[in-house]
Length: 152
Image 1 (cartoon, one colour):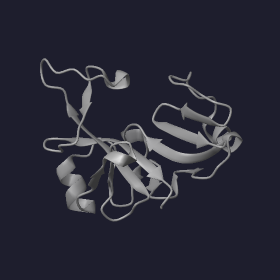
Image 2: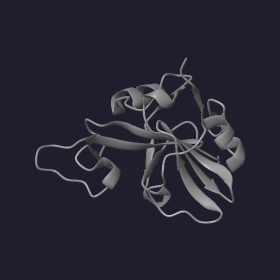
Image 3: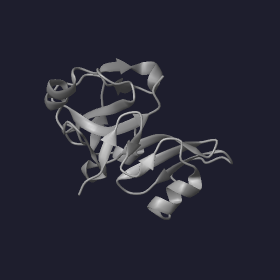
């Protein structure tokens, strides 16, 4: 059974506000870190899910692929832009929010929108080099990641 993505709250048993120890108890050991870590903040990667810690508490839960979870209305990583808009309304692009698309109905969920690279295109985003291009124009695009975040 796939986990439920709950905007502003959780992905499955992982909840916003959990301690590092609680996250590790549920997910086990994370993959080796790809970026800088500090004493109080870190990005823990567990394959299909990543957890961003600040002050050693989970502040962002990120669905990295379709196996991570699905919203109650059927939105998961890989869903087309057209399906996202039909189900949840058109999200708004927020460059000041790290270039994320904020859900039209609930500020507790955001998206990375991407499309497959065309021949000759390159991306500078190393995790997706040669794979996807994160974009601001959603034409022919899909949901690349889903972020569960604290509501403002």
